[in-house]
Image 1 (spheres, helix red, strand yellow):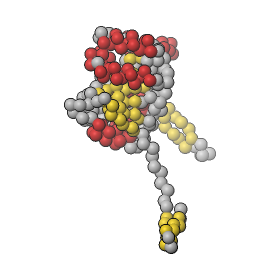
Image 2 (cartoon, one colour):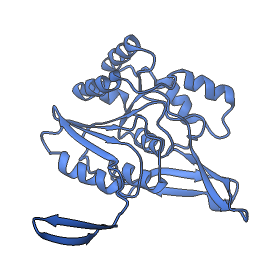
Image 3 (cartoon, helix red, strand yellow):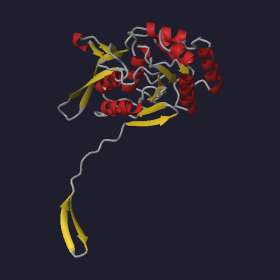
Image 4 (cartoon, one colour):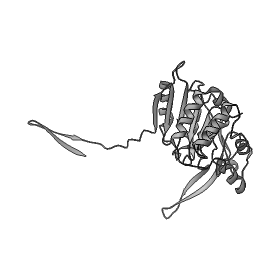
Length: 273
């Protein structure tokens, strides 16, 4: 777009070029020795922005923990989910896919290193967390690297291929399902938290008290989840999700994350074994 400018008696023309500026998907804030990170979605630059935030924000000796907020995150690029999970892992399995065709079977490994330098990590999720966000939460939970807090997530764990049609339309073909590191399917089940906040403030406090005593309140449900294999019977899906019903994020999520980092014995009890 051409633009004519005038300053005093001087006039000149300039050409303005419009370009797409991607929204900032990673937000970082330091509060009380904790690095609070929020990821709104998984776009092309999410991993680089997250890595930068971790390298700048995690200060050895002073950073007590990291909270990764994935509430309301509807997902995005699979490769970015793997890269984000890799930022908290030194290596090992992040996710795998399986389907009817042999080519549908793939394995994604973490490249490392752990940019959070081993400090405690809490991942916040809610009923709107989906797809790539669920892959990250499932990977860090299954690998024992983070404690998940919130409610059951959406349960969107399918890989689809877009096939163009002659009439200009598109056909979506479900190609494979995503499996968490321990082999359970994300589709339908979603990710269950180690500390549930969707049952109300009183239940959340009871859960925290049990964790302080070394008694994980979601241990049985998480054991059943991790033992599940596709296809999971609908009754089992409903039973597991009812242990911590999906709900929108709430202020108690943040308070619970802070309490876990402030109480090492509760955090340790909540980690996957």
